[in-house]
Image (cartoon, rainbow over all chains, first blue to last red; front, top):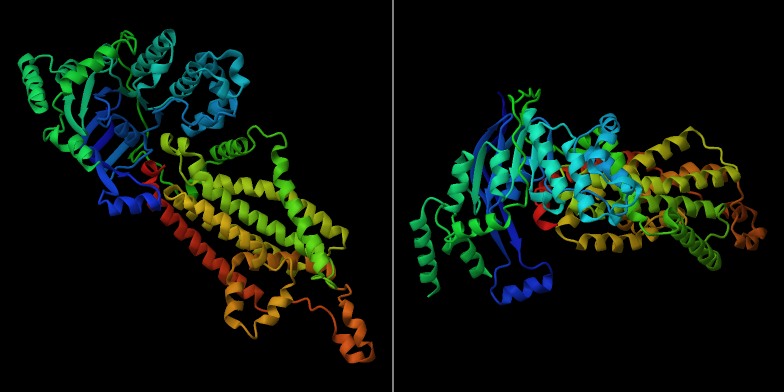
Length: 258
Length: 357
């Protein structure tokens, strides 16, 4: 099997700008406040993923999951290290991110599909399938600003899942959809997993990750601290096995507060 | 705020970045999100071996104008998105891009007629219109491209598109808006007896190329700058206020040409402006062929009737700079260098877009 994703010593830093106007900058300078600060979102991350592997990405909010996903998607480039991928990527970084509210569902469908790398012919061929999966009915020709958030997400997901990608990235974007649609999505993802697509799945729902993935990466404050089997990863993240470790943490926390 | 950041980064985390209460938070989060996503059974049977016929490459787009033009389908769709955004919730829609130039044209024409600036100048309206179309295209391209990255930040931040697509789409929109004006201009020229020669076509083509390359370079550069500091779109608007007076359209070029003797440096600065040169070339293309044989006597020439020699020389001189072609070719070469530089700078700033938008 071929390597699908290579992430090598990846570091991504952001600069936090506290002041945007000249006046605010001058005030801050007088008060000796910092004008900007570096923030390391990802710290020296390395791993490789084989084609067909299904990887769960877990971690607390703000641990760098989305940053890692945008790096693999190619929206951002790492400051240090490199990211390499093989084949076509369909990213569900944010469903319907490219939708323009004034344009109709149909127009947005074509635009979004083209951005995800589909050609005109491919889009025309898959159009019916996508519309059927999205299940938005007669709303297809109304501007997407009239859509409910569920419809919005459904259309976005339907486009991305039909790209026939070699790598499929799914962020926790499906949280907006309703239960039956989510079920449909997960089933569809299992289907493309079966077809040998590499899947990168971000979720906090342990059971869902367990059923979808055969490997878990745990990110903590930008560090890749765990890379291995699913159950172990979930246990690692929640300290399930080390009860006394938990006690110690709570004690330490209380101590710090006093 | 520094302390807050320290707390976030240092005090509460160990060397591996693990926070002290991470496990507790992880459990709480997992509890809350336990049924956020449903479980679908893993499919039975062996997984298919998908053969991917591609190299391992960086997932981010290489960028550059070449890649943008390599996917005309996507470029077309994004251009359509621009048009939709521009005329959202507007009844007149596209008409608005004609109302403004039309009113400006009328204002200038009336004002200049009252001031008698163009007395004795044949087909002054055409002279003015040529300049206005060129400046309109330039200002739409430059201004539109400058705002393009900022206006499309949801796409820039979330989707993998070569980012040069946005300024390029803005340039296409500007061209689409200017095209009907060119048609009107051509009809107007024909109606006053337009017979362009080969030289006229040459100048017209060179002027068009010059204007396109130069405005593309500026648009690309300023779209990146404007993503960093939004002041730049106001700078562009401010600079454009002067542009109507910096090109020879409401006054004849001969007035400027006469000034070169006393102010050679100012003249060089005036002529260095690629838009000025383009306007001159367009006038050579559209306007000059209609007036070659026209009467260019100035109204006060009547006073000189007693002196036949002076009377014969008393006409408004229709002049073009003698070095127009050489200067134009050099400026074109410089503009291409500018475009290349703009692309380099764009590439450099591009990595900073996500944190600045």
